[in-house]
Length: 187
Image (cartoon, rainbow, N blue to C red; front, side, top):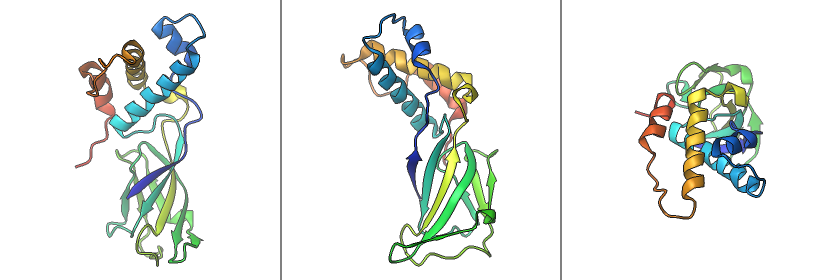
């Protein structure tokens, strides 16, 4: 199963103003850099937790329908199925009725159940099923406070150590502790 980002978040969970206040930056010379660092910190937190923080659209691509009639979302928290379609051997698409899908956003990862009796099997043997989903907590105000604090700390670490080589790739223990309760693990 592959997941492809279709529509990135329209905003960040931490505003430029809040980030500059946290970093104690009172000039505008580095606004572009700090904004890029906010996005990078969000992406790092999202990658580590396997969660989308702000509402985003993703495409889940499957080769075949799972026999369990249940698809675990590769991105959490799952909000909705937006569209689904099959691709034939020529690459043409056929839309599927959205009412054959039932979203369970409460599970982690979110799950998409489907009516196995109503799905059509794809003619294309590889990547024949596409399901567009919406994932994320919602707006910046909806992101849990520990995740926003982890982004602040990742941002401060990146800002402090930029270009010095002292910023190793390991997730610092304090930040990992903030992110751990939100981490979606696969077994």
